[in-house]
Length: 193
Image (tube, rainbow, N blue to C red; front, side):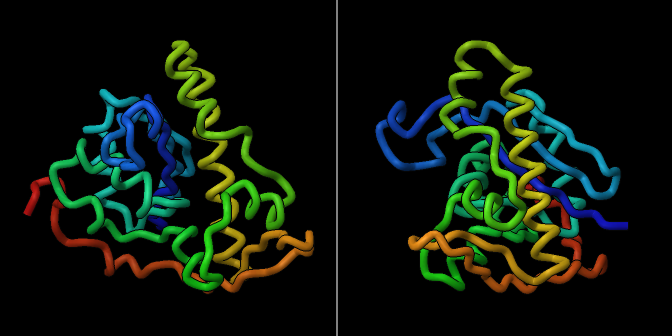
């Protein structure tokens, strides 16, 4: 049984609101997840985050796009352990490691899958501010689906793609394998030690 989790977060505010490019200063509005174990999409608003931690701690690994640079720093202030200790596949890190530069998820999804995201992150902040929580949830879970599908492509084909500056599709080797269940962390990370 695959115990992997695909994760994406949305925030209540922006870097402009907090006056610095520091993800740890942002407040989480919503976390969207896809759980391979149950083949379900689930969402967690800020007040529901304590229900998320045990699910992440049980995971063989957490998959996302810019987890290390954005999602995890945002989530860290809500989590009592060291969130960076979760077994992780950050697709953006894998891409940057191979190319030397970063590419937006939407660009990778368009070139790899032929479909993209449903919008941009600032829309999610507006949904939060306007109390449009169903739209926020749908937006985030669509990003989770796109991330999952890009991950699945990398897992099964060993590549993802993007369109370079000349508009030519270019493949990026991303060799991934399913984790061995025995590699799961043996400790409860939320205890903080």
